[in-house]
Length: 249
Ligand SMILES: [Zn+2]
Image (cartoon, rainbow, N blue to C red; front, side):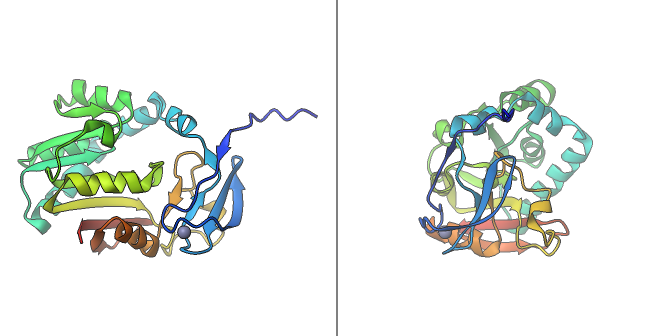
């Protein structure tokens, strides 16, 4: 019988943390293998879809989902900006990476920051420009923006890290543009959280082609250490997500 499933072209990578090539197979979802590095214990999709297939997934429907529940998202963005501003006594320039429609950028502007946003997904940027009247939103990858070094006093990246194909390049760029006394606020699903189902394949954060990596505090620490960054604080979270503030080492 013919298999109606379209075969995806998958590519194999070395572990982005330890450069190892030995992985334990965990399970498969939507034809994509979830594995764990034998050395550093990072969980990831490997082999994974090619870069063009991954970015093609970020279409308008993804952003349309984001712009729903705008009131709730605005409130959350405002809370995040106020908390970071108070905790670290920061002012100046704020960059939100993976800004989508720009709710965090809007909240940062309201809190006195000169705020910028970047996202690879066009529809979100257009929504932010037209509906929220935000001027400093850019479409594309972070490195394409070529921001000046040591430029931003605060950088946020919520639910972004798990999507980024080249983690080390991404963190290197964040470190370069972060002010020496700056702070990076980051959130990503936490595979080490007590509420992650015992049968891992049942976890709703497992998203083939979207969430490429699944960190816990230990693996995130190793990745940051390799890129000369450090976790300053871990915030408690009722949901399985790792919420950390990061500074230069
Ligand atoms: Zn590894």
